Image 1 (cartoon, one colour):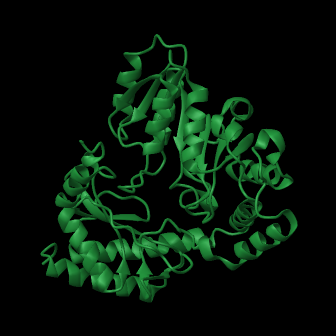
Image 2 (tube, rainbow, N blue to C red):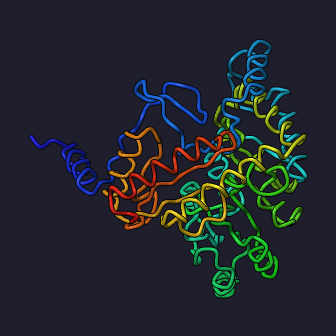
Image 3 (cartoon, rainbow, N blue to C red):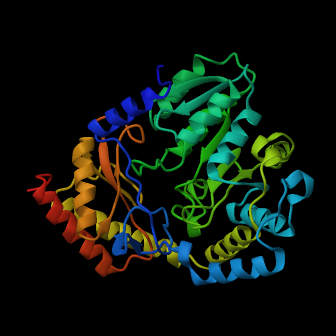
Length: 393
């Protein structure tokens, strides 16, 4: 009898042969500048913990207080009996922080994209999507069943040409990441807005890697370009710079209201836990009061990137703390990551399909909690491994 699952062994073998098989590490400590894996202390350079909030004392204390008052979970979707006063408070705080009319919470940034796109457009409508947009945007576009037209990465001129060729749609939606997570470059949102407005297109930005990083106190890419009130929907995550879990959409009142009525993850999945919600409220309050964590993040990023360039590494075209160490070959990237680990630095190799074929890399994620000695130690290890593997001379 034929085994119907034989293909799994074949696919797994192919992944291993190409250096694309993922060996997932298990972390045994809090997420911080240093973590423990397999009982070994390592410098953490692959977390999205931009501001160090994932293990911040104030957030932990707030979460514990919320558990004591509300328990561990709401036990229902928002529209039945799962809406806590904490959820309403956080939505108001996020709207205020992002300088928009209103906001709505989701279970993750991925859920926020899957929720929003199918509400904004129908199968008879059209979406214009940047060719390097995040997988959750791509999946949200697929769910909508709208026509998807991909424009050249961060290219407003190509976007305009594509729109001009497709003006006969009732609803037109332009979607872009704010910060592109693999390369660290920033979308030219000001120019994209001009094109969108010229042709009466809705504009949506996924600011997952912009919040806590760009703009005043980390308000994001809309604040960075001073486009308040001009972007229809800002999708965000609460699991990166904010350090917790969850997602949200911030924007115009009408969009937020229709999402409450039609967004499937909002209607059919249990709401954020009290602990997570309260921890995010605390994080937003910290950023409202001070931009010091954001300044420290950029100070660390500038220092590390300048040193890496001097060592001779190719760090691509990053404009943010995301630092891709471009290696090309997936097997080389895997070996590089393995040797970094042996030397006490945790930085994972990324290959296809996370990045295009032939563009494998080590993506270094800088955090505000990294001290200068952490950065210097990591630089020394990168130099040592880079010379061992012939990446730098």
